[in-house]
Amino acid sequence: MSNSMNDDISIETEELRKRIIKTAWNGKAGHITSALSMVDILAVLYFGGVLRHDSQKADWSERDRFILSKAHGGLCLYVVLAMCGYIPMKALESYCHAGQNLGDHSNMSVNGVENSGGSLGHGLAIAAGKALSAKMKHQDYVTYVLTGDGECQEGSIWESALFIGKKKLNNLVWIIDYNHLQANSRIEGFNTLEPLADKLNDFGFNVKNVNGHDHEELYKALKIDRNCLPESPTAIIANTRKGYGIPLLEDKENWHGRLPSADEYEEIVRELGMSMEEFLNL
Figure: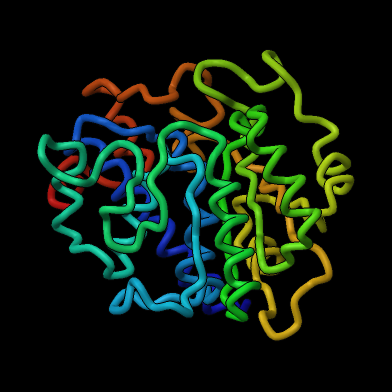
């Protein structure tokens, strides 16, 4: 990734964080901290030249597929899609409003969204199906899927991982948003995924361990040469921090799905480097 592209993505991520907070403010809803942990991942995918996609042809058969398994992070995906031109920026103002289709969890009635979600643990299976379909149809698109770390305690995740390894779906990239927090507790206090890399290796994945907020590391891990695919399916352990970029929220328990108070919103806006007037006019 060139320095200029890296700088461009950094600008995009700043904008993303601001619009995530503004969209949650407008909708009086949203899993803000879950959305913030995945900002850099989605920015590199959509703005960094990793995904092959076209906002003017959302159903283009040759597009790469992105599956959001942790659908409560849909707040981030919606903003990305708006910034890419899949949906009007104005549509974000309808987030979580009655009768509108931008709900708290991402759904495929929204242009550019590949799957509906809510119940965790299913996105990896959906991605496996899309990757297998590409193989069977001799298409060269790559399927990317983002799961949370908490949902990796679901048995369906490991059933899908077994299938992906068995079928050697090397056109699939599984990204794990490893922020160590689930709902209102830490992963380690409830269960453990470790040794995660060893387990993924045993399931037949080529494992990459990266800083999930470093754009250069993410780009190198995510970029797949579709003309010379790796021998094995790829699993990326993206080490992230829930609520990343906003000190009030970052790596804090009891923020999953909780909305800030009026005073907390003012503090968040200050931490984003904005005045309340600038925020309200965003």
